[in-house]
Length: 281
Image (cartoon, rainbow, N blue to C red; front, side, top):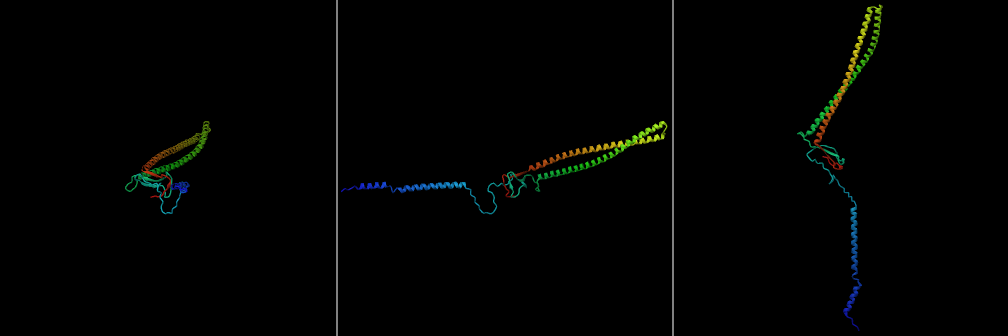
């Protein structure tokens, strides 16, 4: 009969129990499962982050009232004390960058609230209107003078033509009278004519010569009148051109003064960027 040591038996059982490994296997399997689950959550988080960064969301909310932009609105503020002279835009109008929105004036105003600069500008404009009217009156007078001059030239020219025709006939009669006078003189010398007949013929010839001389003087007078009328018309044209140049220079001076006064106390506000006029007041 053989009796084994109890300590030895316990040791062999302990070794056999350790070698089987069944109690430690579930612990290893559970750790791998947690690692896999953690990896899946990380992947899902990365995918969700990517989708959020690449997706544009649009939300529509029903509302009533006036919508005003938080940023980008341009408020018209004068850098100095100024008065609004003119608004160049309308409510709801679309404007682009650089468009003129309003004109402001920094001029001096009198006790009635009127601009002193505008009073000076108005006076210059009144002077300009008077100058233009004066020039128009001068041009109208010149036009009437031209018409009268043309009418006078036409009358003198017509009279001259008639007188030239009469002078032509008188020249022919004078030449004929001269031949008759020579014939009577020849007859008188031969004793075939009387002194009375010669004297009558000579007197008639002298009258024709006198009339022809008078017609020649009248023709010279007509020529002088025509030359005078032509010279007067040319002088009137020259005076008109001089008056026109002088008026233009005076108008330019007045316009320059008006522009200088207008720009002296007036500046404009322009749009800083594209937009729509939301409020006027």
